[in-house]
Length: 288
Length: 275
Image (cartoon, rainbow over all chains, first blue to last red; front, side, top):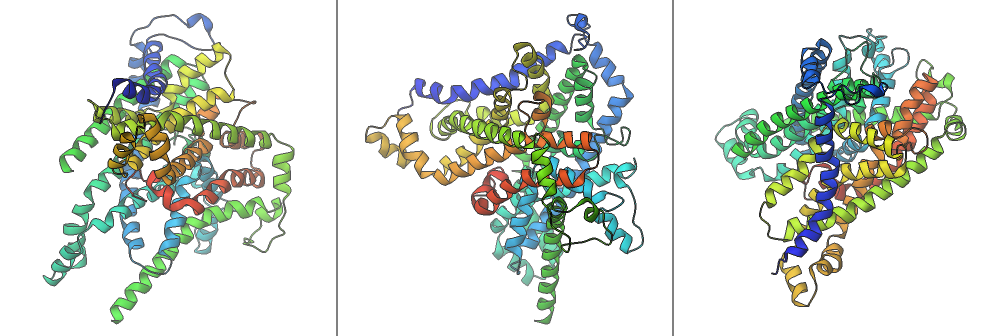
């Protein structure tokens, strides 16, 4: 097969140029303006060089650290719960009972709906006056609680919507690799007296490991970037109780127009995401 | 035997419980969009026995700019998907077929562009577009959506091309096809279901995208998802209208999914499912 250099360049160049323009260029631009003290509503501040001041102030800012804490709690809770529930759901759908096909179709629809619509739907569900969740809770005698208006319950309440939306991703990935689990091994273990739990933990789970790690990697990256769903449900409220770093960055850049500080935060986020994903990739490579 | 029957009944109940959990919020949004305000707030809940009305749709399409937002969404989704495919498919073909040094590195880099938080691109492009005068245009939003789509297109199409045996293009090239002709005349027709799935998935990504639409557009070229949050602030708690707008966003996508789900699952699961 001939592989002329011209072909390679022609085929790859458009993609590489677009990706450079949309990722490398913005990163460089953000790095530069994060060293200045630029506020869009104060034009005279544009070229005031301040060095690492924005980074130092950000890392000392209790509001930023609080939002970072919310982000990490959110990511860890979402990923752990979605992976566990996704595996259970895949095992359930793998049992051929009446409705398993419908289950797959219905569950897939959750992840293709716009997160803003998902947020709107769940906001409506949580409404203390006429939302469905409180309606059912009322039936058993608890109801009428504003879950999204209470700083203590707002994160779990949003997490529930996130789990509803993204467990299907884990479900699909795991479901696709369930046929790879060796039936012979399962039967042999059954004959040797292993119970259902032992069979799951010693045979099924190890063979699902690569796909579970893929799911963990993807969900971690996306949960870290989560913005739409939270914004549609609470806009970061009540107060700042559900304000993760992404909402804080948006507010800093487009409510207060402090683009330099927001860029510094974005660069910190890029560094964090890179660290987390390279750790996860390392684990994946070692296990896979 | 009896124990097995009980187990199947438990599984059956669980399956349908999950189905109800997934259908309920969607059912709720769609029915609320057809209710009058009085019925929307009625207790006990009127599940289906309310006066069906299209007043919310008439209001959102008549009084607000929703119809314009709808066309903006259509234009941006089609433009970014078509251009995204034109740019991404050759790269996917090259990654699948050419022998290249750093192929894995390149592939990983393309995928890793997905990791960047959207705000990282939003700030520079917001500032630039304001000074270039292209803020709030279809062009700007289309470019940002291409960014969103491109890494998926390359990743998905590469996996579809990888499924086709390499002998297929070898014989094509023996017959005198150039690489480009090979891709257009042989590989793309063979992978047309994958191509369709990739195209539809690109449309879904653009159609649902919210962050860039909110930051980089205002009146002229705002898309549907961004318009929902303006409902929030302008109308307060007009649930009926918000649900009508949500239904308009969600319904076309759901129809695609029901028609195409076997092709789509591969894209949705990052190529883990060979659909």
